[in-house]
Length: 101
Image 1 (cartoon, one colour):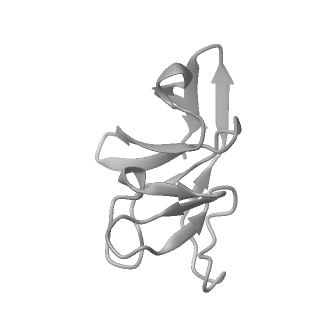
Image 2 (image 1 turned 180 degrees about the vertical axis):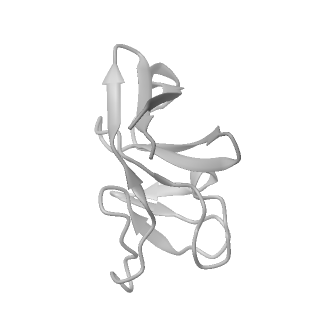
């Protein structure tokens, strides 16, 4: 699977989330206390942009309806059977890349 650069670590403050777009796909790149997980950038509830949300602990909060998704597993906080795709992340110096299918 190819690695695609999506962010610079220096522009991703601790305990924040950022939106990255590759082609037509959006991704949410998180910095959870120095760990950098990535997940799909569209909330399955109503299509909200997860990368424009906020972090609540280790969960991304959708800015549209406040649904929360675990940054590591992609699981919903209320119903763990609902999930957002997660992606392997590689940090090389300041470059943050994700592994895409």
